[in-house]
Image (cartoon, rainbow, N blue to C red; front, side, top):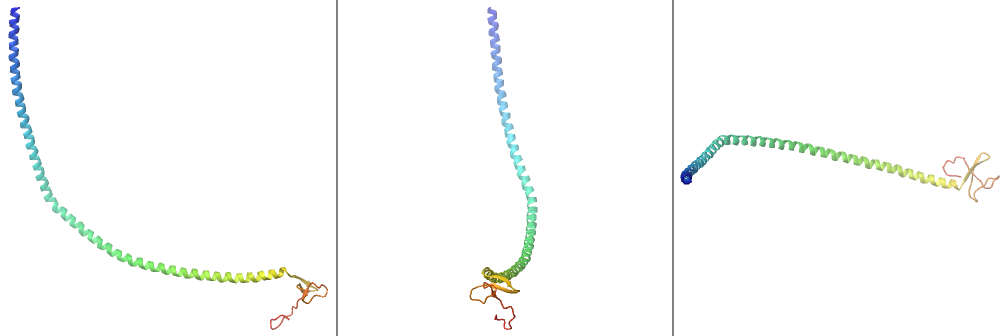
Length: 188
């Protein structure tokens, strides 16, 4: 057993040495790894800065070439817009004159139509007044006829009227009418 303990102690010492050696190597590797990571980080930062600088230079160069072309295109567009505005002003002036002419024509047509409507209304009103006068006369005649009886008395027309009138001898209710024409238009 002593031998086993001695071997175990030797083995433990050897393992301890191996662990310490591995720990030292691990620390050394970690330091190397940190340095490498730092170097890589620095390289990436340097590359990033160089890439940004190259991009800025490329953009500056592209803009320096494109800006004059863009300015020229804007100037040409401005010239085209000015010519379009001038053309629109000319067309507006022309259509304004036409619009005024059409407005005067429409106003004239409305005036003529109004005069025609007033004239037609006056004519219709005049005809209606004449009809109303005739209807009034016709109404008076109808009213008189409602109070009169017209008949024939031995072939002579006769009318039954008021009591003071000259009467037909066969029937006192009827008055004889004189149907002879009078030259002065008055009744006998």
